[in-house]
Amino acid sequence: DHEKGAVTLIEAVIVFPIMFIIVFIMMMAGNAYYQQARVERAVVETTLNASARCADPLLGYVIEHESVPTGTNSVEIYPYRYLFPGQMNNIRGRMESELIDRINSMKSIAFKGMEPRDVSVSMKLKWYVIASFIETDCSFRVELPIRMLFSNNNIAFRYEIHLTEPIGDAANLIRNTSMVVDFVERSEYGKRLAETGAKIQEKTKFLR
Image 1 (cartoon, helix red, strand yellow):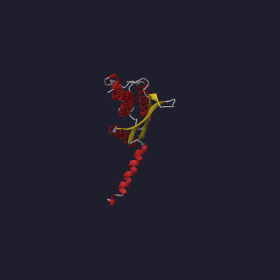
Image 2 (image 1 turned 180 degrees about the vertical axis):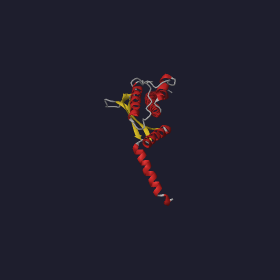
Image 3 (image 1 turned 60 degrees about the vertical axis):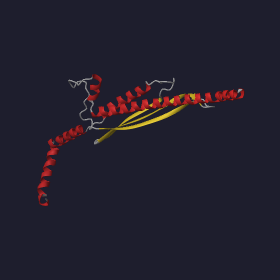
Image 4 (image 1 turned 90 degrees about the vertical axis):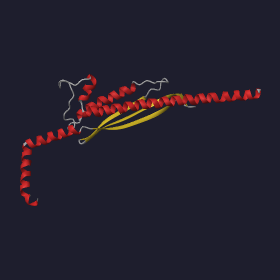
């Protein structure tokens, strides 16, 4: 009995610390995964918000004031943003800064010092007239409060997130296209073009 008790005690002394270390590491890895999920959610939400605001710049005012604007003073409208994409870059820049601030303000939940570090965010506007996109790239690392043997640096997980979100506003694109067509038709160049087209149609009647 004394020998069995001694063996059991030795087994407990060996197994319990190992199990404790394994559980501790699993908890830290779970916290690192949770931080990744938080950052990924922030990237998705901010990118979707940037896409929606590029499609409808008034959305920012409605979200901030919880009401529809009664006038156009100090309100972003950007009616020709598809012709002048620099206006959408203003929105993109603000949303990029908002995402950086949001990630940098995240705190560790379970273990101190496991907040996202070395955060790098790049939000780009891909403008192709007919189709436009917001591309967001985010990289960061989460450092665990443990070190490998013979190492001066803590173990760290590095993450990279990439997201592409289309900017959909077909109605606005059609309106802008119609505006360009109307402008061309009313200009002297448009009139000459219409006259030339009429002459071509007149001379090609026999082909119909």
